[in-house]
Length: 501
Image (cartoon, rainbow, N blue to C red; front, top):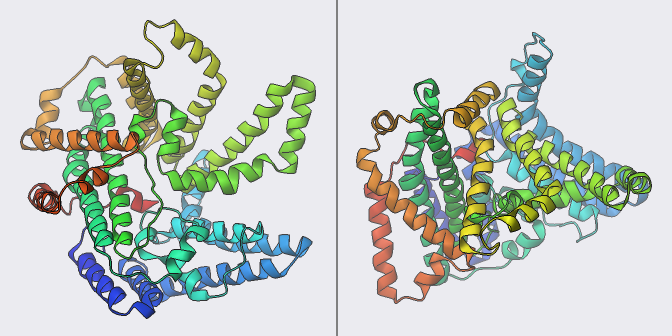
């Protein structure tokens, strides 16, 4: 049951109608709908999927209560076993095969690991992270363990968010889950508009830029460095409109039930530094790893001792930096594993971004001095846009490896970009990617996207701007959006990219 399928719309309409028709049962209607969505959308058999869902639920629910009831060493043991019970399931079902294959290839071992290659389970990494976060919050005594198992189940399996996130926190979801929601026009209008904006991004913009990416990276030997560079920049647009479009659909779907999920993007391509970019991209995942991995590691006893040792022998600055960089390495290693643990994804989502962030941090004072020597004012619009372009190009280094789908091919593509940038085959690319009739739509889509992100960067949004207009203007624009999506949308071309994670 894809988010772009007719069956999803039928399922969603039926759920919304039931939700508001029987207000006393709203939580249970959403819970049943979430189970139905999982069982219909998952390629895994119903029996195995139910078994997995029940296992995750009972480990989370029972583990949190057991943690709350124990103290001292017993609490630590129960917490560790509960988290291992959740993390091990995620590792075995999603990452063990790829990691085994990677290690086997690095050590030149001929080992058959096909028995570890399980069918992908939709949303597994998202709802498992949410469950682990809930258990850790109870362990840190941020709140008491929830006694109502249906509430915990709905938090974990709430169907709009399990497809591609966002990664939610129980403290933010509990009140919304428990409160009865009255039918409000504002929620329905906002939800539908948000969904339409997401479909516009995915079907009208993303799928068209994907044609350029596929044309070049399917046969990179036929193109020059300029073509590969253009294709990589197009992938940046494709990935952003695909993933953020999915989030718009998810957040819009949830808004129909009066439940607001956290934002996952904030105009990332308006970022002036690499660090700022990752703070604006996949926000909930980054915050989850910072709160539940990086900060606990950074204040752990071994790293505190390491920091004190470095401070005594190498100075105060080194004493601060060493624990910070060590925790950063752990964070990015796990993010690399989360993205699938294949070699090219590990390079793209762990090694390259971590390296860029460390270089940026280590050389921040030097880069600031260099910037002041340039003939532009540091806070000028030109200087801001130069930094935005620089950040985009650095981030695109990561995505070269994703597009190339292997580390060696990615290295070759980067080499071609750096040494062959003057070689361009635009005529051949234009024909191969079928750009002709799509060009005007691509330009229109990019113009709307840039304007929307500009507003978001300034602290407002398209929705807020439209909300100030009269009802009939909003209605006309709504119908124009629908017509554009139906007429120009490339339905059925591909799934959302982040479904695989």
